[in-house]
Amino acid sequence: MSIARVFPSPLAAKAPAPYVAATTGQRCEVKYWATEAQAAALLKQASEHMDIDPYCLNGPQRNISVYLDSPRRTFFEMHRTGAVLRYKLRVRTYDNPKGPAFLEVKCKAKSTTMKQRTTVTQALGRAVVSGRLEALAELPRTTALSTREREVLDQLPSLHTIEEIADRLAVSANTVKTHMKNTLARLDAKNRSHAVAIALRESLIV
Image 1 (tube, rainbow, N blue to C red):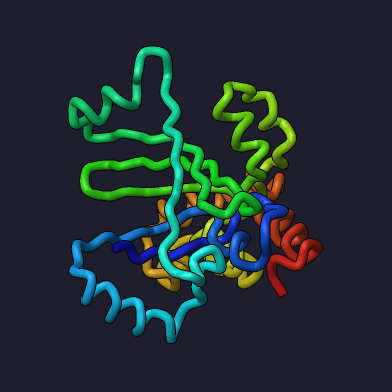
Image 2 (image 1 turned 120 degrees about the vertical axis):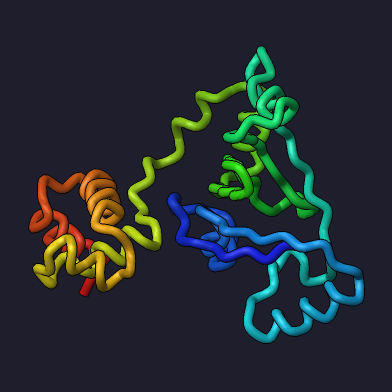
C-alpha cells in the first residue's frame, strides 16, 4: 500500500474536479508492505481524514500503465544497472473509460522517489503512446507554484530579508534564493516588487 501527500496541480485539468485537480502535480509517496488486515485497518482510519478517490468508491481499481523510453532504452538501462539517478516516463489510466489519463514523470535519487503528473484526456494519452507528441502542444504552459514557492511568495510583501525568511521557514538562505528565483521566473516577474504586484493582481496572495 502507499500513502501519498499531494501538491497543487501544475496544469488546469479539464478532468473531473475537484479530485483530479487536487491529485495532479507533485506527489510525495511513502510505501509500506502490509497484510490485507493491516491495509484494511489503515484505510478505515485514513478514510476519516481523507476523501476517497471517486474512481475507487467500489473498491480497488486496476490501473494500466505504458512506459516510454528512448530507442536506446535509456531509462531501462538506468534501472538495470542500478544508476543512482533514474527516471520513468509513463502514461497511466484506470478502468473507467470516461476517466482521465495521467502523464507521469518518476525520478528516483538513491532512496528518494519523486513523482510529477498531470491529467489529460484519454485521447491525448493515446496520442502520446502512439508517438504523436505534437499533441502535447495543446497543453498550457505551467505557471503553478510549488508548496515551498508559495510559502516564499507569501513572505515577499513583508520586506523581510532573505535570511529572515529562511529563519521563518526553517530552511537555508540558499534554499530561499532558489525558490525566489523560480517564483520570479514562473510569474515572469522582473524583481521581488514586481512579483508581489503580480501575485496581488492574480489573487495568489492577499
